Amino acid sequence: MKKIYWYIFGKFSRIFLLCLSLVLTIYLVVDFFEKLRKFLKYDAELSLILSFFACRIPEIMFLLSPLAALMASILTVGGLNRTREITAMRSCGLSFYQIAWPFLAFGLLVSVVCLTLTAVFIPLAAIKAEYVQSVLIQQKPEALLSEPDRIWLRVGQKELLRIDSVEQDGNQVAGIHQYTLSEPFRLSEIVEARTALFFKGEWRMEDVVQRRVKEDGRIEVIEQPSRMVSLPLTPEDLQNWLSRSPQQMSLFRLYEYIQRMRQDGHNPQRYETDYWARVAYAMAPLVMTLLGVSISLRETGGRSVGAAKGVGQTLAIGFLFWATHSVGIVLGQNGAVMPVVGSWIATMMFFLIGANLFLRLK
Image (cartoon, rainbow, N blue to C red; front, side):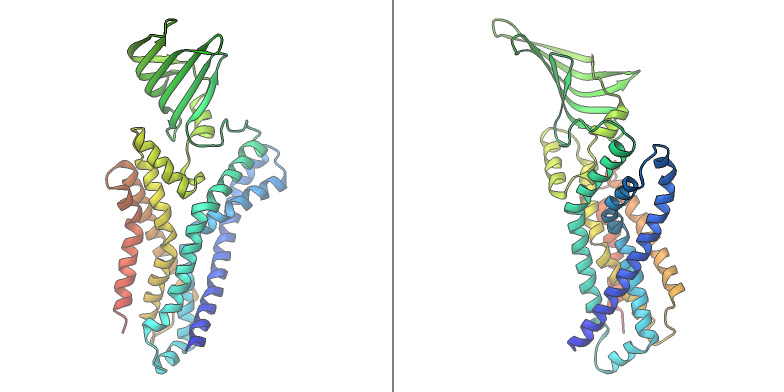
């Protein structure tokens, strides 16, 4: 019996790797020619271009693994059905559930690998890819800070500026702390603001609290509804350098950052949605394997699934999953539903469909 399990496991794993290699190659070729003109504009060397795409491979594999798992499960079961091997297994006393276990075991293995990729390796590769594209190819300055928490800037000779968070578009920052020093390195003023907006070419702080340290040590507190701040960066600079991209943070780092935002009184909804979306999407290969096996085993005994039909089913189901997943993320980020609900809605929906089909196999 174990030989049959390992036979199915090996056959499915080989077809999965073949499907993943195929869709990965197609994606890279399309992406390469799409970005080639942009890179050639900067006279980029071929080695740098190849390095950029090499750094993107872990992320692309993560994105395409559910599609490859679905395609491989449909084609593998279709092939076993075409050669009457499933009929032979059934005649030996194996149930559909026993036949499906090797598929689900490999699907679970792929999901664990995907979770490891998104938790650790994809953020590191994304940072490297951004460095190659921005600094080495486009010749832009390096990011002011590599750490995503509590950005510190020097403004002029006597001022330090701390920024707690930057919105994705770069036009708004939150948690402004401006420190003014006097000789000899003495703190003379602290200005804090809830937010700062880029307005008519200047940065304007809102809900400002100004604290002046007098010579006798007393502190004078002045509250202002708004105040201009001298910030030598444009929204584009902040967007390129300082905005916190969840894709460039490990899951542990992203979780810490969400807790920090809550403690500071900011809304972490967008980051919490991205956190759960990465976890939910990592489980998608297992869900797609279950769904693909359930659909294919229902056709056992009839006409086997051909390659063209299998690819068609894969594209249709994959598109529906991607669309549902994207809508769920948007709903979670906008507050229409809880972040965890919006992130898991597609994975749970397709899991329930696959489980229902699987339990109805006869």
